[in-house]
Length: 349
Image (tube, rainbow, N blue to C red; front, top):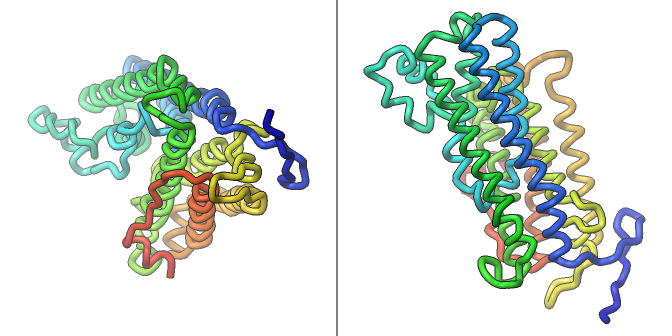
């Protein structure tokens, strides 16, 4: 029997988990609960929109907006888990920004209804626009708007439910059983998929949710490109994704990814408890930075107008986290795509 060597992580002596144990924790303690929340909140959003359109008043509009916020934040927390069955979903229902001019025209004109099939007029972004920009319930529930809201919410409920069902039926078990054959010949193949999506989630935050609205910190700012600004959920959305990142990195306790980084010696690379501790510390640092936004009820888009570089500290901290995760993938000897788009160069100066 192999000797299990304890290693110190954050001053606590921990035994080395196996890769299959880490994968089981990722599936059972992180991915499955997150994706269940996405599917369940999508169903509640569809029901709230149905109630709004059946009885449009301030109360049902408020409930529909609250249901959208709940569904959106669940979706954003699940960002690191959109691999496997969820790989295509972000392109279908998670894209920002909505084309408001086209959307306004298309929901009121049957002649333009084909435009509503475009990805720019669908997903969480389009629902936010339809629910949060009207001045009252009557304006939010014209026949064309309700028809599109029904279509959008039903689509999200259907797609997220199908994703969760596939995880439950096959994909989760395939991850846990990695090394027993297809599709993951060894556990490291499954962990590579996990790490790749984790890096994709950080890259999306850096590029689309911070750099583009900030004009890459050298051009004119575009606060309207901030995600979920109409509902006032920009910061909450970023916090939700960070919570998802923390869950995928530290969830599972002694069988977490970060514990594996601290304890596992590979064929070439050695364990790195220093890196593991630094990753946890960096997550905490980003949490503190995000908590400092939107103070006293001031929305982040207003802050961006006043100070075009307000998001620069957050950008740098997330970039450090991304670099640490790349280093962690090397420690674990994973085959991971490392994003390094040229469009980010200006933001790193």
